[in-house]
Length: 406
Image (cartoon, rainbow, N blue to C red; front, side, top):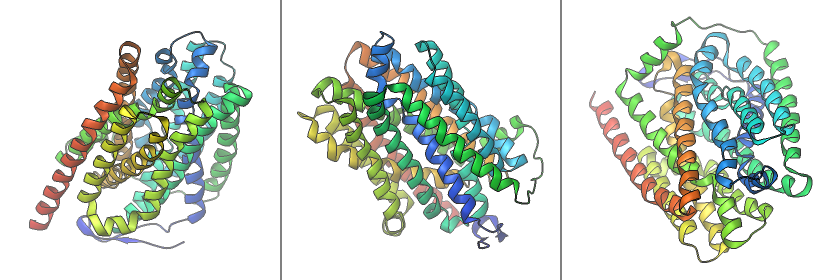
């Protein structure tokens, strides 16, 4: 463990010692959370067959998770600020076990959608509070690098969720995927809860009601800008990602395990970014990474939309994952500094708008796919994401100039 001193705009602040074991357990919980988030992507055709419905209707299992995940951020942020972020993450992880067991036992689609909503409510407390815990423990100058390492765990969870969701559905039935997730949540949540219960806990000062904390964050112009950009990012990037396996299956007749394996390269691209984050940050800076990320995603989704054969999706998913995490990691770093005095609330609000955007984007994408085609969804994201990355890069450069002038 080591003590980190942060400087910059906040002044000299001595952070608590960084507990690498706690960070590792938090990362394991984040892995499980992201796997759960993406577990349904590659099993949508299986769900549609099981419940005799369309792929768009089966996608309610994805949007229910995303919507409840986003809304509950407003609850978990202040709770983590008040009672300890790692402790809240541990109990939230254990609660995810209940939702996954309920999903595995679902007798109909509505039950599954409700179970996914319950899991999303519990999982809402995991990744954002882990980010906030890092924000409390790591100086801003080092924070993007540490967040990139956490990103590696979440990306691996995404890869496993997408790939094994399709693979287990094909081999043992979709219910087996939720049973495995329940076991992972149970083990990781138990380990973290035991770990933090052995540590001394320091309750932070009560900064007021949930509404007051949220309003304090929203009163800051830069925070509002980061949140708007993040919501749009969620709508454009995550909604398209969710339908790539189904698109490859329907258009090129790939099996769902094969389609899930192709989309897993999206996560590999994220892992590649996480390994190169330090060098990329030195080379491009925050603004350059945002612009690069948007351009990579635009190229990737355009390729998926108009590819004449499925092998084109291989490099597209790799480049798309790299681009998404280049932009998203930059947004994450800015989110941890939106309101240092209420960091749990600020980061949870960041996640709230991200997954609100995701849920709205998936609902709209499902409507478009049922009436038109999946290619139209990918083309829309291909147009919007480079513009979004360029806009955020412009805003970051302007903010840096203002801070230097001050």
